[in-house]
Length: 230
Picture 1 (cartoon, rainbow, N blue to C red):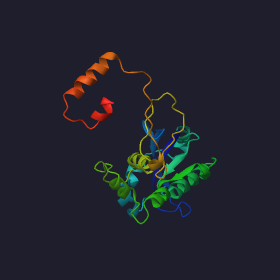
Picture 2 (cartoon, one colour):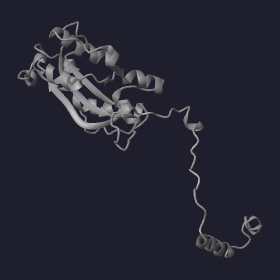
Picture 3 (tube, rainbow, N blue to C red):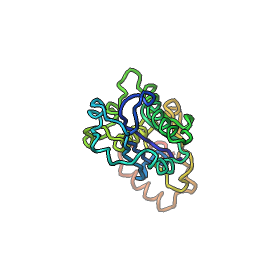
């Protein structure tokens, strides 16, 4: 099962209000395990960077001035994400900007049926708690020391680790069927699951019986002595 965890950085909060995408980072998961494959691009927004947005991600007008336009990177982005489900934190925001840019460049949008929102998952799993990416990383013991400012690729990598924890933790198979779905035991099922050890299919040998009898003879009044004698 292939999934794409992604994050974006923008010039502000509203694509319809004139804000633009300036960075996108994507991380590939296969069966909830990061493969090491990523996609990352900085994008020239063709508009000034508000100081409020700069303070979040540190991407300045000067830095972005020589970066490609969205139209120049869209093919690589679409090739990487393919038709896989796409996971983001507060996903409506990120989908809004990606689809806004796709529409602006005359491309079909990414259907919302592919959207997985980790914020919605976290609200259900941890009601009443903080649900920011930082808070979830702290909850699950995920290292944040590499992160000083928001960055799309590093945030996507952190979110991938959070997503694995939110959905039950890493499930590593033998790799014999990479595309096989991962079946997870729910909290309700765990206490009722019975683990049965297969019965021994052969009798003890004479040597084993002899060693067992010698072992018992060295014990004083074993609890099973009467049963053994009978």
